[in-house]
Length: 340
Ligand code: UGA
Image: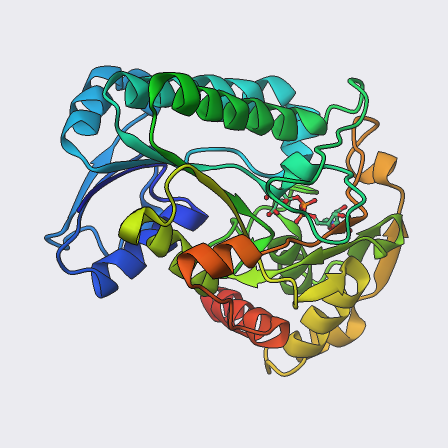
């Protein structure tokens, strides 16, 4: 199996590559990214061919690679909600326009694409668990710019589906539901909202800053540990007996539900066990902050987000296994050791 991964050094790409290199010795990876810091341990591996470069400037190289690989994963995207609000045009140009070029090349060469959709496409859906084929996708008004990410991803999902139905594009869409773990975001990024919530709170703890709970932190998410999520992604790529062909899968853990306030409390209690951060964690307070103040007027939140995963369980024969406390402990251990 020859796998082309674009955006290879990101959170998902780097964990995926680590897993493939250890669990799939017969697979070969061609990887492209503008950065390489998350891949430094693997760059000399004989099964990984890494190329450094900007995907928007490398169309002909990408086209050549698409023709000779078996499956394409375009993973390059910005996925931090603060950026959706502050720089929505950047989201459209990278997450949608740049990736559309890759999708079109896959259509042209009839190459299988495994594309990252997002839990965000369900938006403010009221279902207790979001279903890939039944749930409505509910976004807010245009002036709530947060939704440009969900809207761009939704349009890409619809295009891929249409290309499949009308042009024979083989595809799988996967929807990450708050994947967490090491290497998710840059812990040294001090910008408010510069990271997703787990890295943001850990950065706060490391810098001894109070944790800010947007609108009190009663909104909740279900979190899945990256290793569990990558196992599902490997099964999707492997596609044994076409189990993932022309399907959409939520990849999350509906048992690991926590409010954002509970998440902050869990992270503080885990950090207290670490000698270098015990005092930080004891002194830090949880502060309520209005969403408008934290993100700006264009923000609107998702109050509850839990996936239905029966399709992934049934078709992929997959099951998430890591409980939330273990997932957070492993993440805390990685980041606190990284900085101490
Ligand atoms: C995320 C991102 O959009 C994507 O990474 C991804 O597609 C998707 O969800 C997913 O992983 O499922 P969200 O969960 O809202 O969206 O993003 P976070 O930045 O992780 O925030 C989670 C919650 O924590 C939000 O309600 C946010 O308001 C809150 N938060 C965040 C705080 O209360 N304080 C902070 O300092 C940061």
